[in-house]
Length: 99
Image (tube, rainbow, N blue to C red; front, side, top):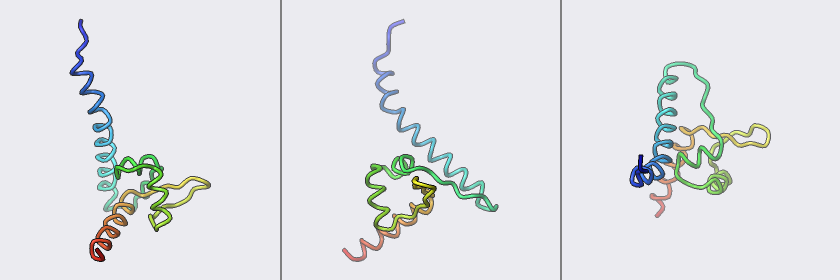
């Protein structure tokens, strides 16, 4: 059977986007599931946090110096996506008010 170049190209382009969409859906579903209970907060590593907010890991580390919320487990920083999103939204609103 001949190869389908269009299908292969679509898979290369859409694959990472679908993966990110699935990760976000899982995080949202877990947050919703634990909303009424005492659920432990979900922490993610720097690479995952960078993917979730569409930036580089270096940018995440720079934002940590500006107050981005994280916890340290030994040498590793962990992030709670909901807290990071709240912080980013508040920071954006503050900067818009000053600008």
